[in-house]
Image: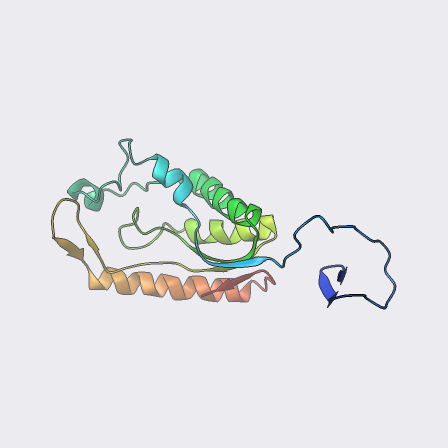
Length: 178
């Protein structure tokens, strides 16, 4: 038996001795707590579909590194985050550690991406951990060459810290930075 009130589970076990307002017979169902998904790629759904089209980021060519165009615009990013996190929820996850793919990034995400992922958690009622992912180097396509820029990496680290502080200060009971 599982007894809950509002959003708090009060009892799990056999033969609950207290009173309840409503009984749901779930004897032919699996009842389980929500799962924790610590590695949910929160934006690959639409990006993977763009591999075969002529957009920057696939592969990381010289043109990719010199372009300022993002692979996903703000609207596609928002839809992508909602789709990926809704899929996690549909599969039983109630807490998610969201990461976003770096395959489409030069050094870090566009300013609108991490907040879009955080907003998707709130909209869907998921608990989540979000971050501003970044790197200071990446392999180029069809070669062993690596594009590195330590200063850009450090600048992205500063943006990551600012984002974490913003999430922490938001007071959300669902979304936390990592």
